[in-house]
Length: 144
Image (cartoon, rainbow, N blue to C red):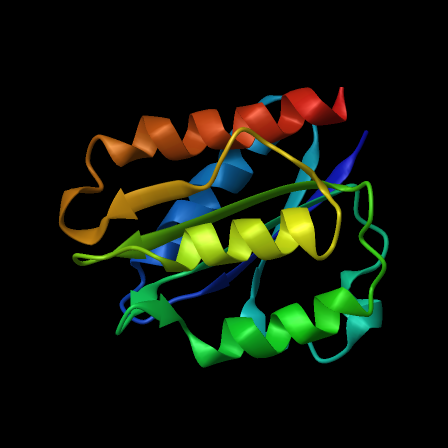
């Protein structure tokens, strides 16, 4: 059984909810998934021992939250090359954070990324529940 870690930075709880739904999709596919707040990652060793990494941040003033930026610097030292990856986030109107995280994971960390980032509008998570679970299942398919 493969293990995934879902790391999130959330302002209002929406990105946390999306992360939990992604983890649920991974678990429904028969894999383990841990959901962790970005500020709980203290060093690169906290990121070791996983087969998939799904990182998410709310978009705040057109960018990812600072705590996710800091976490990405730690992730760069964790040697994630070739690991399965995905990114996600909630947004109000612009939604750049998941794209920036995705591109960092793909182009800097050289990870085996899913089809693209998951971006969900904060005010409309109703239909996003199935989208987030399906995103988790897409990650799980890469683990099989």
